[in-house]
Image 1 (cartoon, rainbow, N blue to C red):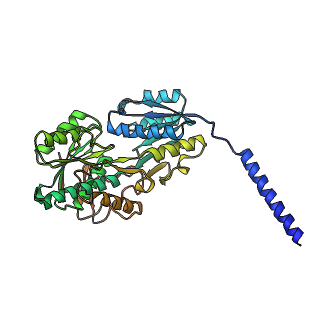
Image 2 (image 1 turned 45 degrees about the vertical axis):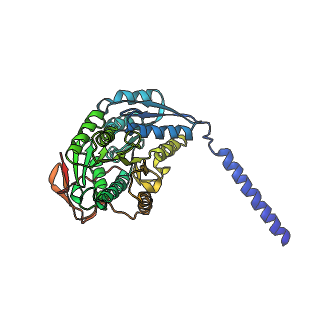
Image 3 (image 1 turned 30 degrees about the vertical axis):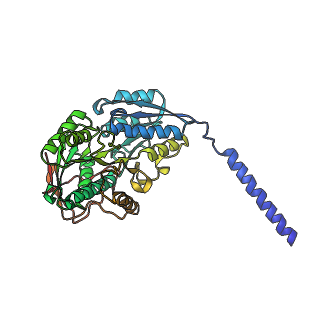
Length: 399
């Protein structure tokens, strides 16, 4: 009997070894596979928005140093991007990343024409709109989460100033330099404002649109006008450091009390005495996962760690897709770092609902479309791109 058990055990071990040998023999070896990955940028490394993408491109190159060759196209206008993207196709790219909203239609058009190439478009929401293509994907980080925490950081500074009697509550005026009246922008500045108001409920905000994604002079001048009108905080959804430099100049040259919240990169280098905090989307997790999928010939959404909506992927602090950067500890209110860490943990555990409260939001393009935030609005419930498109009545004004 004992001999029988020994023979059975030996047979089992041999069988397992043979299976593993067979799996290893037949498993595809991807270690030597090399692909070209293309990137289309609306700016270059001189603009924080594009530089944030380039940062993740560089991290992708380090991660797949033996498998990936990258090709980048810089300063490509949204209304004239087809030639640049076609060139990436002609150069043999297996995967192409579009990094600005306005590339979406052309990216999808070329995906139809080139079914063997994977096209991934950031900040867009047309992947699940007919025609749905197996080689066209959209993705975006839940930046409203970072905006909300930035607002809390600013709110804590305002409260400190109020407690020190340097300002009164009615002086808690915020100026916001915004690119376009799109849901992506409106969602972001509303989340920021609600973060401020969670600390200083008397705060009010004025939004000025640049009607361009990136123009240093325009952004700076709008920030200067908002400061002249009494705003003591300037925040931004625009691509340059123009608003940050306006704050620093107003403070150091003109002696005005003003602070700044940035986007995409730390801005303490250009505004060391006024820039408090920045937030950014970390594109690296998606770049790496999408590239892995193409190398291994798998569906991109099967590899990405995110909430998946068909061919669309999105995540926030829970999967490392959002970062808080550039906290200026020299001027931040006491306890700010601890509050940031606490709020990130809450977002990771889905313990914060941002878009709620005693507010009425009005769609700027349809005054009959009103959202009462007593009924919480769940951002990114159906797609990765922001969809909150309501301006809060009586507390946010738009110029």
